[in-house]
Image (cartoon, rainbow, N blue to C red; front, side):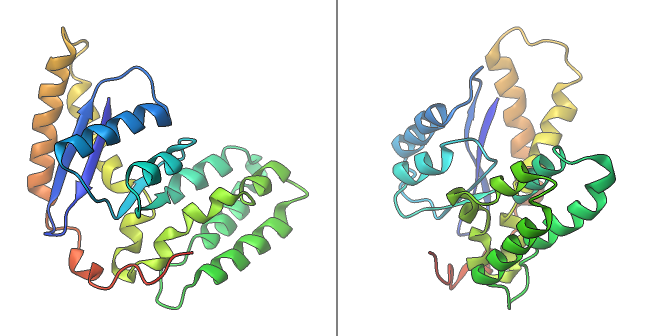
Length: 216
């Protein structure tokens, strides 16, 4: 089940799309974006997602002028999955520091310096991990730095929608099967509407008055 969720300028959260599809690819998400456009979504400022290959290009193609933030938490988890147990604590601290750019003095240049330092420290032990931080796509993990401090923690991960996903799983797991996909969608829709009602005030959209500062 695929969910696209939005935060609007008036500080409300809104379900934009809910689909059941056995496949996931940037092409599938491209079809979803086209559906959003047909429904009237004509401008998206920022897309926050996990690291599905090709999704950033698809999002920018469908919504020109939008920016893309890949989930930092997903990246950290993927890195730690490739690390030997004896090194996990030290490396976890270092990789977290690379993405710890949450105060007003943080800059993209500073983040890249920290990333380069991390790579020098760990390249001999974990060359594949280091290689994953030296791709052109790495800039998509630092988009949040150009946004106001008040919202950086909210937009540098997919935690907002992951919280929603946990709510969905908690309810749907009590049913072993659904006779029809529509039944699953109906139940999920009710869960999401309840989630919206309880969370609409938690995103300080007022912080976006002068965003983003710049983008490279």
